Amino acid sequence: MDALLLIDLQNDFCAGGALEVAEGNQVIPIANALMPHFELVVATQDWHPANHGSFAANHPWRKPGQVIDLHGLPQVLWTIHCVQGSFGAEFVPTLDTTQIDHIFHKGTDPDIDSYSGFFDNGHRKATGLGDFLREKGVTTVYAMGLATDYCVKYTVLDALSLGFTTHLIVDGCRGVNLQPGDSEAAIAEMVSAGAHLCQSQDW
Ligand code: VGL
Ligand code: ZN
Image (cartoon, rainbow, N blue to C red; front, side, top):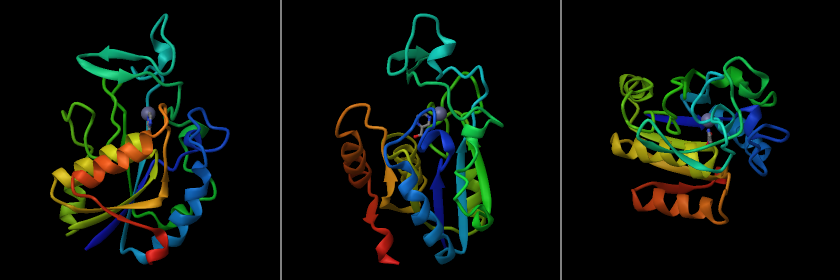
């Protein structure tokens, strides 16, 4: 069985959001159009407590974009985003959430970030997404969402390492691009790890 993975289609990654991804809103109609083609639709939500270690504001003398050591892992610092229960953490209002079968939260532990929908950045704890997909008999996943160079990339790499046949819906993704070209580099990395590329028009 195939599953559609919608990564972090949340207000804070879209227009006016705290961690706005350029053109992020443009992927919402693509998600809405693709959902009816899948028997199983899973969405992830970046879901941080206010004291999360990835927020620059929680580290004196630090600012967004800097990289620190967070409990032994390199951590890019971000502006405060996707705080549990906040408007910024909600799905974009135009997303048809009635077609989502299951939601997985990530980034809930203040001590470690979680870009991937499957595991935290240290691969210490699983979110449950991998077991959920296996129990449903899923063998193939199609991923899209925000952001290409962070949460989409790490979700796709983990899906591949868990043995799922993994497709990236390229026009359904947009990237942060802290450095120009980060999104293209992320796509190349996903492809070399075994991901297949497709476009929403393929349906
Ligand atoms: C994300 C940075 C921080 C993402 C989440 O969804 O790609 N990026 N938290
Ligand atoms: Zn985050």
